[in-house]
Image (cartoon, rainbow, N blue to C red; front, side, top):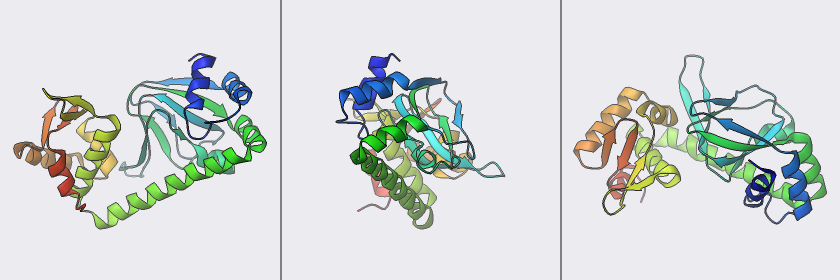
Length: 232
């Protein structure tokens, strides 16, 4: 990305919006960029947390892997969102892994540059704390889902969230929504086995709720899926 594109990316985020033009240009000039292929690891839990990231394009999964290889997804980062703020704020190690779900491009802001910016603009430090609070709230919701929702409900809820986040309108009237993701990736995000995801999706396909093809899942009846989440 050019400096101008990085500046425009920063200006479009809640964290840096309304910042002085000179401040943004200074940050953009010092920012780096990273390109990741789908499946590439950006950072691992325990790595030094000396950079804040802003996603320009693609999709990034933040999560963790247990010693026996099970994966848990804490969140999906979409274009225009910042992440990596926890370790940047306290100077500690990364608390999770970050992996590109799709080919992605990111702007990289060094911790020293970010802290200097926040020292000059305390109102933006408050915005960063608000972003952190959103992460904590999302973690609380995830914990509630694990305790209170069945696996089918969690899967249906995740499909709806993914459809809103990265779904592509398909079908003759554009009413269907296609998610380009493997069943293994989906299983990792929900915290269940791929076999269970395959079984549930096959059942829902027979009922007309979804359509399945290699590397993609199409939501055909979002209302019926929503009913499976247990939501009112």
